[in-house]
Length: 239
Image (cartoon, rainbow, N blue to C red; front, side):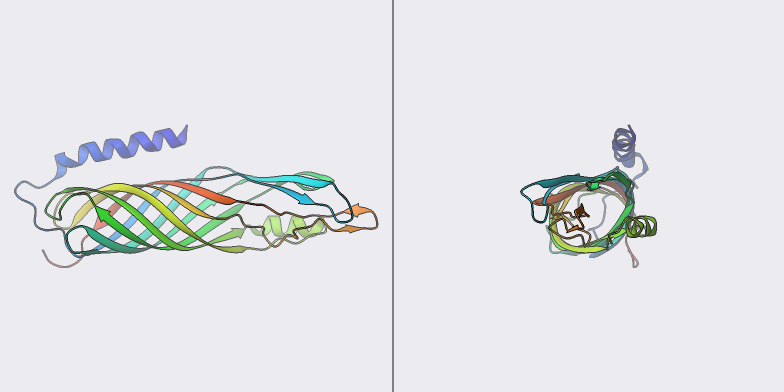
């Protein structure tokens, strides 16, 4: 429900934006922009069938995160009439559960945050003298998948350790900017942030000691983090 509320909210703000714009012909969009934004992040589930040491059996497990809040900031440089480049930092927070981390543990509460650093290129569909500028974007970067301290301590009590993971990835998406005046603008973004699935330091084969199987997690494929955000743009300098 909250994701649909966010979509309606951002759509309403964009539709209301022209009512706040200054009259008269807008000046050319400036070279530099600073943006601060918030929204929702929908991190995908990650499943694994991990082989058990000395056996033909597999441990089927999954990490199932909930949707989380998203906060971030970015700096953008507009290059020429139709291109831009930007660097951004995005934080998101996800509760969830780790299903079957070991054969004897049905579920473990799983809390994590993601910290993403990306360099993106933009292509604008309209020239810099237009107040409304749709765009597409793509970029590369890295994400830190960081675990809450409680799951680290709980996993140690269960006989295994979990660690934070860095993963390189890329992002594709698009959005629209609306310039209210020569100092302030609005921005809506939709993006998919894609990386390899983190294993959080768990072994790719389930270890067995004294006939008791431990923890293992060997996910395959990619992990998607769908992001929707609404932001405020500030244009520095005198215009």
